[in-house]
Image (cartoon, rainbow, N blue to C red):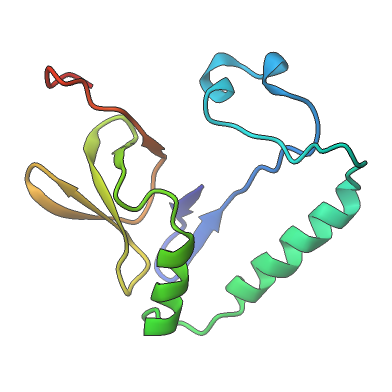
Length: 131
């Protein structure tokens, strides 16, 4: 999750489920959340260290537009690209990946929107036109 924190700043948040299953999760998470739990024990400190190392690598990136290589890396890993999504339950369309400024491009009924903050969720459009 990211939110705009002012000019030149982004406030980012991430949740990593390392144990447990969906049975104890609230209904709004049960259909979309996953866990890292495996047959082997997962050390929370090691997971946290790995997440922080990766996050710091991104945070130290110079200001400015994303390079062609960075955009390709995002596209390679982008699980929402080409999927129907909704943003904050208001804007709906097909995710097209980030633009060079890092905004998520969403192609909706009124054209392409560049989203810089909010909650993006996949959805399955109703064939009758209702969401």
